Length: 510
Image (cartoon, rainbow, N blue to C red):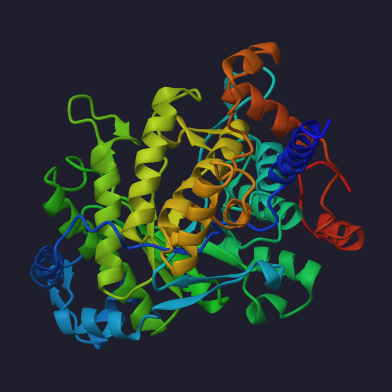
Protein backbone atom coordinates (compact mmCIF):
# COMPACT_ATOMS: atom_id res chain seq x y z
CA UNK A 1 0.00 0.00 0.00
CA UNK A 2 2.74 2.41 0.96
CA UNK A 3 4.67 1.47 -2.15
CA UNK A 4 1.82 2.80 -4.32
CA UNK A 5 1.89 6.34 -2.90
CA UNK A 6 5.04 7.50 -4.68
CA UNK A 7 3.68 6.14 -7.97
CA UNK A 8 0.45 8.12 -7.60
CA UNK A 9 2.38 11.23 -6.73
CA UNK A 10 4.69 10.91 -9.74
CA UNK A 11 1.76 10.44 -12.12
CA UNK A 12 -0.06 13.46 -10.72
CA UNK A 13 3.07 15.59 -10.99
CA UNK A 14 3.70 14.38 -14.52
CA UNK A 15 0.21 15.42 -15.62
CA UNK A 16 0.70 18.86 -14.12
CA UNK A 17 4.05 19.23 -15.82
CA UNK A 18 2.66 18.12 -19.18
CA UNK A 19 -0.17 20.62 -18.88
CA UNK A 20 2.27 23.34 -17.94
CA UNK A 21 4.53 22.53 -20.89
CA UNK A 22 1.54 22.48 -23.26
CA UNK A 23 0.32 25.92 -22.18
CA UNK A 24 0.80 28.75 -24.71
CA UNK A 25 4.02 30.70 -24.30
CA UNK A 26 3.23 34.07 -22.74
CA UNK A 27 6.17 36.05 -24.17
CA UNK A 28 7.66 35.85 -27.64
CA UNK A 29 11.24 34.64 -27.03
CA UNK A 30 12.50 36.04 -30.33
CA UNK A 31 10.65 39.24 -31.31
CA UNK A 32 11.59 41.42 -34.28
CA UNK A 33 14.41 43.88 -33.79
CA UNK A 34 17.06 41.34 -32.82
CA UNK A 35 20.69 42.35 -33.27
CA UNK A 36 22.42 41.38 -36.52
CA UNK A 37 25.93 41.72 -37.85
CA UNK A 38 27.35 38.32 -36.95
CA UNK A 39 27.92 37.39 -40.61
CA UNK A 40 30.49 39.54 -42.43
CA UNK A 41 31.22 38.25 -45.92
CA UNK A 42 33.44 41.28 -46.51
CA UNK A 43 36.54 42.37 -44.60
CA UNK A 44 37.01 46.01 -43.60
CA UNK A 45 39.51 46.34 -46.47
CA UNK A 46 36.94 44.85 -48.86
CA UNK A 47 34.33 47.41 -47.78
CA UNK A 48 36.80 50.24 -48.26
CA UNK A 49 37.84 49.01 -51.72
CA UNK A 50 34.22 48.66 -52.89
CA UNK A 51 33.34 52.10 -51.53
CA UNK A 52 36.40 53.65 -53.19
CA UNK A 53 35.37 52.12 -56.52
CA UNK A 54 31.84 53.46 -56.09
CA UNK A 55 33.25 56.95 -55.47
CA UNK A 56 35.43 56.64 -58.55
CA UNK A 57 32.48 55.64 -60.71
CA UNK A 58 30.45 58.62 -59.53
CA UNK A 59 33.36 61.06 -59.84
CA UNK A 60 34.77 59.93 -63.20
CA UNK A 61 31.89 58.27 -65.04
CA UNK A 62 29.08 60.17 -63.36
CA UNK A 63 25.36 59.77 -63.91
CA UNK A 64 23.47 59.94 -67.18
CA UNK A 65 19.97 61.18 -68.09
CA UNK A 66 19.86 63.61 -65.19
CA UNK A 67 16.59 65.61 -65.17
CA UNK A 68 17.16 69.34 -65.62
CA UNK A 69 16.03 70.38 -62.15
CA UNK A 70 18.14 67.75 -60.42
CA UNK A 71 21.11 68.60 -62.65
CA UNK A 72 20.94 72.24 -61.57
CA UNK A 73 20.72 71.26 -57.88
CA UNK A 74 23.70 68.93 -58.21
CA UNK A 75 25.83 71.51 -60.06
CA UNK A 76 25.00 74.14 -57.46
CA UNK A 77 26.39 71.85 -54.74
CA UNK A 78 29.66 70.85 -56.34
CA UNK A 79 28.87 68.38 -59.13
CA UNK A 80 30.41 68.86 -62.58
CA UNK A 81 28.94 68.65 -66.05
CA UNK A 82 30.84 66.45 -68.49
CA UNK A 83 28.96 66.39 -71.76
CA UNK A 84 25.59 64.76 -71.09
CA UNK A 85 26.72 63.25 -67.78
CA UNK A 86 26.92 64.76 -64.30
CA UNK A 87 29.98 63.83 -62.25
CA UNK A 88 29.40 63.65 -58.49
CA UNK A 89 32.55 64.37 -56.44
CA UNK A 90 33.46 62.40 -53.30
CA UNK A 91 32.96 65.46 -51.11
CA UNK A 92 29.29 65.71 -52.10
CA UNK A 93 28.80 61.98 -51.48
CA UNK A 94 30.46 62.29 -48.05
CA UNK A 95 28.23 65.26 -47.18
CA UNK A 96 25.13 63.25 -48.09
CA UNK A 97 26.26 60.31 -45.96
CA UNK A 98 27.11 62.55 -43.01
CA UNK A 99 23.72 64.28 -43.14
CA UNK A 100 21.67 61.10 -43.56
CA UNK A 101 20.03 59.68 -40.43
CA UNK A 102 21.56 56.52 -38.98
CA UNK A 103 18.14 55.59 -37.64
CA UNK A 104 14.58 56.88 -37.65
CA UNK A 105 11.06 55.82 -36.78
CA UNK A 106 8.97 53.95 -39.31
CA UNK A 107 5.50 54.91 -38.17
CA UNK A 108 2.50 52.68 -37.99
CA UNK A 109 -0.92 54.25 -38.38
CA UNK A 110 -1.27 52.92 -34.84
CA UNK A 111 1.71 54.54 -33.06
CA UNK A 112 2.05 51.46 -30.86
CA UNK A 113 3.06 49.49 -33.95
CA UNK A 114 5.83 51.88 -35.05
CA UNK A 115 9.37 50.52 -35.27
CA UNK A 116 12.79 52.15 -34.98
CA UNK A 117 14.97 51.25 -37.95
CA UNK A 118 18.73 51.51 -38.22
CA UNK A 119 21.65 50.71 -35.97
CA UNK A 120 22.08 46.97 -35.50
CA UNK A 121 18.36 46.09 -35.35
CA UNK A 122 16.94 43.61 -37.85
CA UNK A 123 13.35 43.75 -39.08
CA UNK A 124 11.79 41.52 -41.71
CA UNK A 125 8.93 42.85 -43.81
CA UNK A 126 7.40 42.47 -47.23
CA UNK A 127 7.80 43.85 -50.71
CA UNK A 128 7.19 42.82 -54.24
CA UNK A 129 4.92 43.61 -57.12
CA UNK A 130 3.63 40.16 -57.98
CA UNK A 131 1.13 40.05 -60.82
CA UNK A 132 -0.18 36.62 -59.86
CA UNK A 133 -1.68 35.16 -56.70
CA UNK A 134 -1.69 31.49 -55.77
CA UNK A 135 -5.38 30.75 -55.44
CA UNK A 136 -6.46 29.25 -52.11
CA UNK A 137 -9.09 27.05 -53.75
CA UNK A 138 -7.57 25.85 -57.02
CA UNK A 139 -3.88 25.99 -56.11
CA UNK A 140 -3.25 27.62 -59.49
CA UNK A 141 -1.73 31.00 -60.26
CA UNK A 142 -4.11 33.68 -61.52
CA UNK A 143 -3.93 37.47 -62.00
CA UNK A 144 -3.85 39.26 -58.65
CA UNK A 145 -6.67 41.67 -57.78
CA UNK A 146 -7.35 44.48 -55.33
CA UNK A 147 -9.37 42.00 -53.27
CA UNK A 148 -6.28 39.81 -53.06
CA UNK A 149 -4.21 42.76 -51.91
CA UNK A 150 -6.73 43.56 -49.17
CA UNK A 151 -6.81 39.91 -48.09
CA UNK A 152 -3.02 39.74 -47.96
CA UNK A 153 -3.04 42.96 -45.92
CA UNK A 154 -5.50 41.48 -43.43
CA UNK A 155 -3.67 38.17 -43.29
CA UNK A 156 -0.30 39.65 -42.41
CA UNK A 157 -1.78 42.11 -39.91
CA UNK A 158 -1.66 39.43 -37.22
CA UNK A 159 1.75 38.01 -38.12
CA UNK A 160 4.13 39.08 -35.38
CA UNK A 161 7.33 38.55 -37.33
CA UNK A 162 6.33 40.77 -40.27
CA UNK A 163 7.28 44.22 -38.99
CA UNK A 164 5.82 46.25 -41.83
CA UNK A 165 3.76 45.61 -44.94
CA UNK A 166 4.70 46.73 -48.42
CA UNK A 167 2.01 45.95 -50.95
CA UNK A 168 3.00 42.51 -52.18
CA UNK A 169 0.98 42.31 -55.38
CA UNK A 170 -0.35 44.53 -58.13
CA UNK A 171 -4.09 44.93 -58.46
CA UNK A 172 -4.19 43.95 -62.13
CA UNK A 173 -7.95 44.60 -62.26
CA UNK A 174 -7.42 48.38 -61.99
CA UNK A 175 -7.83 50.01 -65.43
CA UNK A 176 -5.44 52.96 -64.99
CA UNK A 177 -2.51 54.16 -62.89
CA UNK A 178 -4.45 56.54 -60.64
CA UNK A 179 -7.05 53.90 -59.77
CA UNK A 180 -4.24 51.43 -59.11
CA UNK A 181 -2.39 53.75 -56.73
CA UNK A 182 -5.52 54.97 -54.92
CA UNK A 183 -7.07 51.53 -54.46
CA UNK A 184 -3.74 50.07 -53.33
CA UNK A 185 -3.42 52.59 -50.50
CA UNK A 186 -7.11 52.20 -49.62
CA UNK A 187 -6.56 48.45 -49.16
CA UNK A 188 -3.60 49.17 -46.86
CA UNK A 189 -5.58 51.77 -44.91
CA UNK A 190 -8.47 49.41 -44.39
CA UNK A 191 -6.51 46.24 -43.69
CA UNK A 192 -3.71 47.09 -41.22
CA UNK A 193 -2.33 49.65 -38.78
CA UNK A 194 1.30 48.52 -39.18
CA UNK A 195 3.79 50.70 -41.04
CA UNK A 196 3.07 50.23 -44.73
CA UNK A 197 4.74 51.03 -48.04
CA UNK A 198 3.55 51.47 -51.58
CA UNK A 199 4.65 52.81 -54.95
CA UNK A 200 3.37 55.84 -56.80
CA UNK A 201 3.22 55.41 -60.56
CA UNK A 202 3.60 59.14 -61.24
CA UNK A 203 4.19 62.19 -59.06
CA UNK A 204 0.69 63.54 -59.74
CA UNK A 205 -0.83 60.62 -57.80
CA UNK A 206 0.85 61.49 -54.50
CA UNK A 207 -1.27 64.47 -53.45
CA UNK A 208 -4.72 62.89 -53.95
CA UNK A 209 -3.64 59.79 -52.00
CA UNK A 210 -2.51 61.88 -49.04
CA UNK A 211 -5.82 63.74 -49.30
CA UNK A 212 -7.61 60.38 -49.14
CA UNK A 213 -5.85 59.15 -46.01
CA UNK A 214 -6.44 62.47 -44.29
CA UNK A 215 -10.17 62.03 -44.78
CA UNK A 216 -9.77 59.11 -42.38
CA UNK A 217 -7.29 60.67 -39.94
CA UNK A 218 -7.88 64.41 -40.18
CA UNK A 219 -6.44 67.32 -42.14
CA UNK A 220 -2.69 67.67 -41.66
CA UNK A 221 -2.50 64.34 -39.82
CA UNK A 222 -0.17 62.66 -42.30
CA UNK A 223 2.50 65.36 -42.21
CA UNK A 224 2.55 65.05 -38.41
CA UNK A 225 2.56 61.24 -38.42
CA UNK A 226 3.63 59.85 -41.82
CA UNK A 227 2.77 56.14 -41.76
CA UNK A 228 3.17 55.33 -45.46
CA UNK A 229 6.63 54.82 -46.96
CA UNK A 230 7.26 55.15 -50.67
CA UNK A 231 9.25 52.63 -52.70
CA UNK A 232 11.05 54.47 -55.47
CA UNK A 233 13.81 53.54 -57.93
CA UNK A 234 15.28 56.92 -58.94
CA UNK A 235 18.32 55.27 -60.55
CA UNK A 236 18.13 52.89 -63.48
CA UNK A 237 21.08 50.57 -63.91
CA UNK A 238 23.60 51.12 -65.27
CA UNK A 239 24.35 54.58 -63.85
CA UNK A 240 21.49 56.80 -64.99
CA UNK A 241 18.54 58.54 -63.38
CA UNK A 242 14.90 57.87 -64.20
CA UNK A 243 13.03 61.15 -64.60
CA UNK A 244 9.57 59.92 -63.56
CA UNK A 245 10.94 58.28 -60.41
CA UNK A 246 12.94 61.40 -59.52
CA UNK A 247 9.75 63.43 -59.82
CA UNK A 248 7.95 60.99 -57.51
CA UNK A 249 10.77 61.27 -54.96
CA UNK A 250 10.57 65.07 -54.95
CA UNK A 251 6.80 64.96 -54.52
CA UNK A 252 7.21 62.56 -51.60
CA UNK A 253 9.64 64.97 -49.96
CA UNK A 254 7.04 67.74 -50.33
CA UNK A 255 4.48 65.57 -48.50
CA UNK A 256 6.85 64.26 -45.80
CA UNK A 257 6.68 60.68 -47.05
CA UNK A 258 9.75 58.64 -46.01
CA UNK A 259 11.34 56.69 -48.84
CA UNK A 260 13.13 53.52 -49.73
CA UNK A 261 15.28 54.42 -52.70
CA UNK A 262 15.85 51.06 -54.33
CA UNK A 263 18.59 49.97 -56.67
CA UNK A 264 17.85 46.59 -58.24
CA UNK A 265 20.69 45.88 -60.66
CA UNK A 266 21.02 42.41 -62.18
CA UNK A 267 24.34 40.58 -62.36
CA UNK A 268 25.71 40.14 -65.86
CA UNK A 269 22.88 42.21 -67.35
CA UNK A 270 22.66 45.71 -65.88
CA UNK A 271 25.67 45.25 -63.57
CA UNK A 272 28.94 43.30 -63.70
CA UNK A 273 28.81 39.52 -63.33
CA UNK A 274 31.69 39.61 -60.84
CA UNK A 275 30.24 39.95 -57.35
CA UNK A 276 32.71 42.63 -56.25
CA UNK A 277 32.16 44.72 -59.39
CA UNK A 278 28.42 44.30 -58.97
CA UNK A 279 28.56 45.60 -55.39
CA UNK A 280 30.68 48.59 -56.43
CA UNK A 281 28.33 49.68 -59.21
CA UNK A 282 25.13 49.12 -57.25
CA UNK A 283 26.58 50.96 -54.25
CA UNK A 284 27.45 53.90 -56.53
CA UNK A 285 23.91 53.93 -57.89
CA UNK A 286 22.28 53.89 -54.46
CA UNK A 287 24.66 56.63 -53.33
CA UNK A 288 23.44 58.62 -56.34
CA UNK A 289 19.90 58.27 -54.96
CA UNK A 290 21.07 59.45 -51.55
CA UNK A 291 22.80 62.46 -53.12
CA UNK A 292 19.60 63.23 -55.05
CA UNK A 293 17.66 63.35 -51.77
CA UNK A 294 20.42 65.28 -50.01
CA UNK A 295 20.62 68.18 -52.47
CA UNK A 296 16.91 68.85 -51.92
CA UNK A 297 16.44 67.84 -48.25
CA UNK A 298 19.59 67.01 -46.25
CA UNK A 299 18.93 64.40 -43.57
CA UNK A 300 15.61 63.30 -45.04
CA UNK A 301 14.49 59.81 -43.85
CA UNK A 302 15.58 57.45 -46.60
CA UNK A 303 16.19 53.71 -46.42
CA UNK A 304 19.35 53.01 -48.38
CA UNK A 305 17.96 50.07 -50.33
CA UNK A 306 20.64 48.38 -52.38
CA UNK A 307 19.06 45.07 -53.49
CA UNK A 308 21.45 42.98 -55.59
CA UNK A 309 19.58 40.71 -57.99
CA UNK A 310 21.03 37.73 -59.82
CA UNK A 311 20.26 36.23 -63.22
CA UNK A 312 21.05 32.79 -64.53
CA UNK A 313 23.82 33.61 -66.99
CA UNK A 314 22.91 30.58 -69.10
CA UNK A 315 19.32 31.69 -69.76
CA UNK A 316 18.99 35.31 -68.62
CA UNK A 317 16.21 34.37 -66.19
CA UNK A 318 16.01 36.11 -62.80
CA UNK A 319 17.17 33.88 -59.92
CA UNK A 320 15.48 34.79 -56.68
CA UNK A 321 17.10 31.99 -54.69
CA UNK A 322 20.58 30.62 -54.27
CA UNK A 323 23.94 31.23 -52.73
CA UNK A 324 24.94 34.17 -54.94
CA UNK A 325 21.91 36.33 -54.21
CA UNK A 326 22.15 35.40 -50.52
CA UNK A 327 25.78 36.47 -50.14
CA UNK A 328 25.27 39.59 -52.28
CA UNK A 329 22.39 40.89 -50.17
CA UNK A 330 24.28 40.03 -46.99
CA UNK A 331 27.33 41.91 -48.29
CA UNK A 332 25.13 44.83 -49.28
CA UNK A 333 23.70 45.00 -45.75
CA UNK A 334 27.22 44.92 -44.33
CA UNK A 335 28.38 47.74 -46.64
CA UNK A 336 25.41 49.97 -45.85
CA UNK A 337 25.78 49.45 -42.11
CA UNK A 338 29.53 50.12 -42.45
CA UNK A 339 28.59 53.51 -43.91
CA UNK A 340 26.26 54.17 -40.96
CA UNK A 341 23.09 54.35 -43.05
CA UNK A 342 19.70 52.67 -42.62
CA UNK A 343 20.02 49.52 -44.68
CA UNK A 344 17.45 47.85 -46.88
CA UNK A 345 18.11 44.53 -48.63
CA UNK A 346 16.03 41.58 -49.81
CA UNK A 347 15.64 37.88 -49.15
CA UNK A 348 13.23 34.97 -49.68
CA UNK A 349 12.87 35.63 -53.41
CA UNK A 350 12.50 31.95 -54.19
CA UNK A 351 12.15 30.69 -57.73
CA UNK A 352 9.90 27.85 -56.54
CA UNK A 353 6.32 27.92 -57.75
CA UNK A 354 4.93 25.71 -55.00
CA UNK A 355 5.68 25.40 -51.30
CA UNK A 356 8.19 22.59 -51.75
CA UNK A 357 11.76 21.70 -50.74
CA UNK A 358 13.23 24.25 -53.16
CA UNK A 359 10.99 26.92 -51.64
CA UNK A 360 12.13 26.17 -48.10
CA UNK A 361 15.81 25.85 -48.99
CA UNK A 362 16.05 29.10 -50.95
CA UNK A 363 14.04 31.13 -48.46
CA UNK A 364 15.81 29.79 -45.41
CA UNK A 365 19.32 30.36 -46.77
CA UNK A 366 18.70 33.92 -47.95
CA UNK A 367 16.69 35.01 -44.89
CA UNK A 368 19.32 33.72 -42.49
CA UNK A 369 22.14 35.36 -44.45
CA UNK A 370 20.43 38.75 -44.60
CA UNK A 371 19.46 38.62 -40.95
CA UNK A 372 22.89 37.56 -39.70
CA UNK A 373 24.48 40.29 -41.83
CA UNK A 374 22.35 42.88 -40.03
CA UNK A 375 19.99 44.21 -42.69
CA UNK A 376 17.85 46.80 -40.92
CA UNK A 377 14.85 46.31 -43.20
CA UNK A 378 14.78 43.05 -45.11
CA UNK A 379 12.22 43.10 -47.90
CA UNK A 380 10.39 40.36 -49.81
CA UNK A 381 10.79 38.17 -46.71
CA UNK A 382 7.25 36.77 -46.59
CA UNK A 383 4.75 35.50 -49.12
CA UNK A 384 6.66 35.75 -52.37
CA UNK A 385 7.04 32.86 -54.84
CA UNK A 386 7.93 32.24 -58.50
CA UNK A 387 10.86 34.70 -58.74
CA UNK A 388 8.63 37.54 -57.42
CA UNK A 389 5.96 36.92 -60.06
CA UNK A 390 3.69 35.20 -57.54
CA UNK A 391 2.47 35.60 -53.97
CA UNK A 392 0.84 33.01 -51.73
CA UNK A 393 -1.45 33.20 -48.71
CA UNK A 394 -0.02 29.96 -47.37
CA UNK A 395 3.52 31.24 -47.82
CA UNK A 396 2.85 34.20 -45.55
CA UNK A 397 2.03 31.88 -42.66
CA UNK A 398 4.94 29.51 -43.23
CA UNK A 399 7.38 32.37 -43.72
CA UNK A 400 6.21 34.00 -40.50
CA UNK A 401 7.42 30.91 -38.63
CA UNK A 402 10.66 30.85 -40.62
CA UNK A 403 11.39 34.45 -39.68
CA UNK A 404 10.91 33.65 -36.00
CA UNK A 405 13.53 30.94 -36.31
CA UNK A 406 15.91 33.49 -37.87
CA UNK A 407 15.23 35.97 -35.08
CA UNK A 408 15.91 33.19 -32.59
CA UNK A 409 19.26 32.46 -34.20
CA UNK A 410 20.11 36.17 -34.10
CA UNK A 411 19.27 36.36 -30.39
CA UNK A 412 22.04 33.89 -29.70
CA UNK A 413 22.85 32.27 -26.36
CA UNK A 414 22.90 34.10 -23.04
CA UNK A 415 25.62 32.76 -20.75
CA UNK A 416 25.34 33.42 -17.00
CA UNK A 417 25.49 31.53 -13.73
CA UNK A 418 21.74 31.01 -14.00
CA UNK A 419 21.77 29.65 -17.55
CA UNK A 420 24.84 27.48 -16.91
CA UNK A 421 22.80 26.03 -14.04
CA UNK A 422 25.20 24.02 -11.91
CA UNK A 423 22.61 23.49 -9.17
CA UNK A 424 19.97 22.35 -11.69
CA UNK A 425 22.35 19.79 -13.17
CA UNK A 426 23.24 18.44 -9.73
CA UNK A 427 19.57 18.27 -8.75
CA UNK A 428 18.64 16.31 -11.89
CA UNK A 429 21.58 13.91 -11.69
CA UNK A 430 21.09 13.18 -7.99
CA UNK A 431 17.30 13.21 -8.19
CA UNK A 432 14.92 12.01 -10.93
CA UNK A 433 17.64 11.67 -13.54
CA UNK A 434 16.09 14.10 -16.06
CA UNK A 435 15.33 17.78 -16.46
CA UNK A 436 11.67 17.51 -17.52
CA UNK A 437 9.50 19.75 -15.38
CA UNK A 438 12.40 21.21 -13.42
CA UNK A 439 12.21 24.87 -12.41
CA UNK A 440 15.07 25.82 -14.71
CA UNK A 441 13.48 23.91 -17.62
CA UNK A 442 10.10 25.57 -17.11
CA UNK A 443 11.69 29.02 -17.02
CA UNK A 444 13.76 28.30 -20.14
CA UNK A 445 10.73 26.94 -21.95
CA UNK A 446 9.14 30.38 -22.21
CA UNK A 447 12.31 32.44 -22.27
CA UNK A 448 14.50 30.58 -24.76
CA UNK A 449 12.37 28.46 -27.11
CA UNK A 450 10.15 29.30 -30.07
CA UNK A 451 7.23 26.99 -30.90
CA UNK A 452 6.18 27.27 -34.56
CA UNK A 453 2.47 27.42 -35.29
CA UNK A 454 2.59 25.78 -38.71
CA UNK A 455 5.24 23.08 -38.28
CA UNK A 456 4.36 19.44 -37.57
CA UNK A 457 6.33 17.90 -34.72
CA UNK A 458 4.16 14.85 -34.10
CA UNK A 459 5.29 11.26 -34.39
CA UNK A 460 4.70 9.68 -37.83
CA UNK A 461 1.80 7.55 -36.56
CA UNK A 462 0.04 10.63 -35.12
CA UNK A 463 0.62 12.59 -38.33
CA UNK A 464 -0.86 9.71 -40.33
CA UNK A 465 -3.88 9.37 -38.06
CA UNK A 466 -4.57 13.10 -38.38
CA UNK A 467 -4.76 13.05 -42.17
CA UNK A 468 -1.10 13.24 -43.30
CA UNK A 469 -1.34 17.00 -43.91
CA UNK A 470 1.75 18.67 -45.32
CA UNK A 471 2.82 22.24 -44.57
CA UNK A 472 0.87 23.67 -47.49
CA UNK A 473 -2.37 21.99 -46.36
CA UNK A 474 -1.98 23.19 -42.78
CA UNK A 475 -1.24 26.73 -43.92
CA UNK A 476 -4.18 26.67 -46.34
CA UNK A 477 -6.59 25.81 -43.52
CA UNK A 478 -5.14 28.50 -41.26
CA UNK A 479 -5.29 31.15 -44.00
CA UNK A 480 -8.96 30.36 -44.57
CA UNK A 481 -9.66 30.71 -40.85
CA UNK A 482 -8.00 34.12 -40.71
CA UNK A 483 -9.69 35.45 -43.85
CA UNK A 484 -13.09 34.24 -42.61
CA UNK A 485 -12.87 36.71 -39.74
CA UNK A 486 -14.70 40.04 -40.08
CA UNK A 487 -13.11 43.27 -41.24
CA UNK A 488 -10.68 44.48 -38.53
CA UNK A 489 -12.45 47.85 -38.22
CA UNK A 490 -9.38 50.02 -38.78
CA UNK A 491 -11.40 52.34 -41.02
CA UNK A 492 -14.66 53.52 -39.51
CA UNK A 493 -17.78 53.50 -41.65
CA UNK A 494 -18.18 57.29 -41.76
CA UNK A 495 -14.63 57.78 -43.05
CA UNK A 496 -15.05 54.97 -45.57
CA UNK A 497 -18.30 56.49 -46.85
CA UNK A 498 -16.61 59.88 -47.24
CA UNK A 499 -13.65 58.35 -49.09
CA UNK A 500 -15.89 56.40 -51.44
CA UNK A 501 -17.90 59.55 -52.17
CA UNK A 502 -14.75 61.33 -53.37
CA UNK A 503 -12.67 58.51 -54.86
CA UNK A 504 -13.41 55.60 -57.18
CA UNK A 505 -12.84 52.75 -54.74
CA UNK A 506 -13.23 49.36 -56.39
CA UNK A 507 -12.69 47.21 -53.27
CA UNK A 508 -15.99 45.69 -52.04
CA UNK A 509 -18.47 48.02 -50.42
CA UNK A 510 -19.07 49.70 -47.07
